[in-house]
Figure: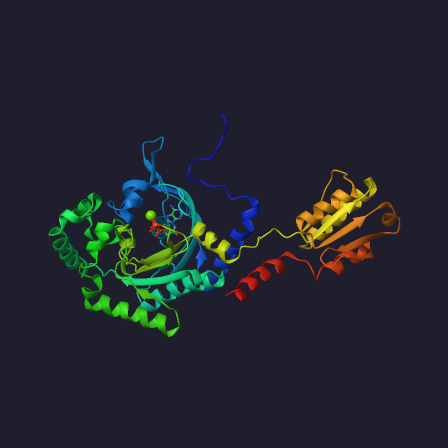
Length: 436
Ligand code: ATP
Ligand code: MG
């Protein structure tokens, strides 16, 4: 039997990883600029944490979770999203007693049992951010702005649309809920099976149904935005103004429901038309009740999660050229003495942040140079017997096809300004900035 990976779980091979690194490091850079710090929580939690925070009638909890019984009988679940675990950690470590405001971000793998297709997998990566301790609409605007600035920085914002809405709070939502029940109850024959169930349990989620009949029906349903209480309405107005003031474009879409029960007030989604049915690239919202519901003190909060695979697909579209690993220098040698010298030089260069590669298979000069070419080395150092005798090497500039002889001790001073890994990352970053 041939071994293989589990359906819906992907390997990310080295030819793709440079792009991932670039996107992740840009995200880190931006999140840190906005004052967010990384938090790493386990990929597995007690099932109850997800059931209680996401809501038992959500798609994720109903049918997408990887849940199993541990040896001691407790029910565990591979995390389907990041917020619940971060909130659990926030409460468990009483972070609120250390500082009134916490800005946290995470990057990591999430698990959902869905039908795999392009941009939808069973194991996938998210980058997420959570801001605890502020209910001010400036915080909503800050978090949404940060999300958008990230998409701008990696050069994919042209493919994206930002939509926002408010889903009210526990003062105005119950009333809206009963209006919806009234509306849909008199139109039951048009609703799909799932929505008939939603009508009893969670009628707001009917607005999110993908079935044509239900979609048509929701056109005339009462809008949450006409049913917000005064406080929620003012909050939403203010979020919009704050975004407008700094030039963030958005559309208002009152049908944004979000799959999870924990949201209050502001909700938002970033979507694309480029990825077929997988149109959501990132989404989030305010969740002012969740910390309290999970046993912490009342703490307003807002956050989002971005789907990495979908971002990568859009990034490949925007920048189709390869994001290759950069080799600065390849060292070719002839003979065993030269090989020792090559090994020594490689060590010196690598210790000075110059990415260096060489073969140990004693192949012909021709095939070593071929490999240098394949790796895209910017320089090749050639050490033959003659060079060795004179304490010299040949230094070939591969791009300009020029060659010179230099002394051993001049190799590093000569290369240090042209090659270094730090400058590679920055130049990637600037290249994308220019492409905006
Ligand atoms: P969708 O409507 O596509 O199922 P969702 O509303 O379930 O998305 P969220 O729970 O908001 O998604 O997760 C945030 C982001 O994570 C999504 O916008 C998407 O980019 C990504 N994402 C969600 N599910 C998957 C998946 N199964 N595979 C890959 N990315 C995903
Ligand atoms: Mg989903």
